[in-house]
Image (cartoon, rainbow, N blue to C red; front, side, top):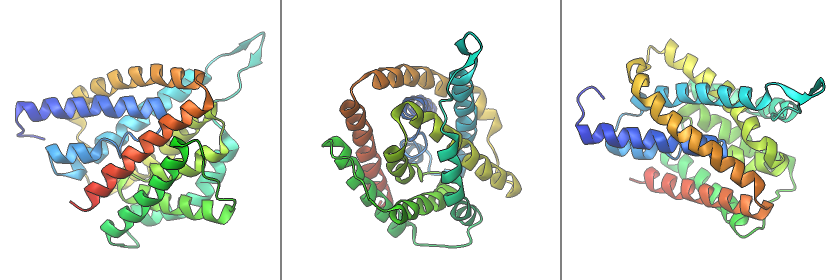
Length: 257
């Protein structure tokens, strides 16, 4: 990112606006829906991953704080927008695979792994689009998906689609996004510590102009999220399914390029 053309900087700025919009609008997808496009502009993942990680830490914590500050009035505390109990369950299932992915203790062919994940997510997305949400009926299957998602999150920060496909079955839509934000904050913090230990350049200078770009998208995404919460449940899940399908198709194409 030190010697790019002007048009490349413009494209990167627009992609980070898109990243902020998706992240705050749905609570996931900021990395997986932007990284493939960023790599088309400048094909160095370790340039962008630390930037995406820091953005997620900033905007996820800010959103959760804003949604949970104050109370209902009369001294009655507001109900948290984070389901802390389910968050604990997610972390308990995912933490070991996450650490395995972070430290590269298991190496699997990236093409095969990506293809499997995005095919599974495609099935989930179609079930939401056609208002037939998938229910595995098996806690073991859900745990397997979460563990694979945790591993992928550890290797590349793009495990969200598989995780959201499970979490959306068990969380009310009013708590889905912020619970995922809390989860991403913890998982990404682990990844960021690994970057620091590995002496990866965090590209701090570029946060000066990319954070405002992501902030613009974040504000627009907040507005969209409120509109989605007010919509009927089938509409919410159709939007969710459509985004998941786009994620899957982009991921499959990227895996075999």
